[in-house]
Amino acid sequence: MTRRYAVLGHPVAHSRSPAIHTAAYRVLGLDAVYEARDVDGDGLVEAFDDLRSGELSGANVTMPHKGAATRLCDSLDPSAARSGSVNTLAASAGQVVGYSTDGAGVLHAWATGGLPTDAPVLVLGTGGAARAAVGALAHRTDVAVAGRRLEAVDELSGLGSTPHPWGHPLPGAVVVNATPLGMGGERLPDGVIAAASGLLEMVYHPERTLAVLEAERLGIPVGRGLDMLVGQAAASFAIWFGLEPPIEEMRAAANPSSGS
Image 1 (cartoon, rainbow, N blue to C red):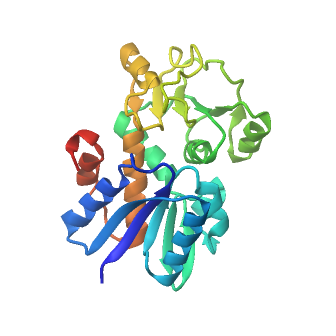
Image 2 (cartoon, helix red, strand yellow):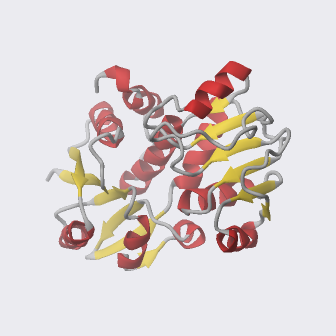
């Protein structure tokens, strides 16, 4: 029987997830399909019904539904419990288990972009993506967090980060943009990239944000949102199928110019 998977979000038409996962299924000869579902809150609940009934075997969750999905899950994997956010759902015996593969995505993009492993890190943002970045990196190096909501910045201190003033550069740090800034052509705060030793841009649409363009102009290494997406997808694939993901084929399919 064909296994069905989906990415749930709003908007979601721009998502590269269907192309990435479909490439993996094709390479490994799996009887599975993956689609994009543009859902509101009611549509998210319906998707959970489909997971519990077996209509869907698994799903990814993107903005703005990660928090709601966390509350709808029957249980959470430790990865999701730590981040307070869910981006991967797996169905088993009528139950929905929530996972977070954001941390795996961070580390994959970090390695792919050749970002420094011995530099401090400045995370911009305080949401689920920021929590994943702090959780993935705090045991490796010094991590500072800057955000407009000071109480949220303080909450992330419990994961091993230190607060940093929003809008202030941190000389020599790798900047992690865990905010939506850039999706609509916005700039990061002045001076933040100029002082950086690298950039992890979690935004992947557009692929080359103003922050990425500035980093390229300055000659500092960049970890891209598409590589983070591939790392997240590969971890989701492993959860669902228990197989080694065909990472190179998935990366090729992630590129919008591939036509996949």
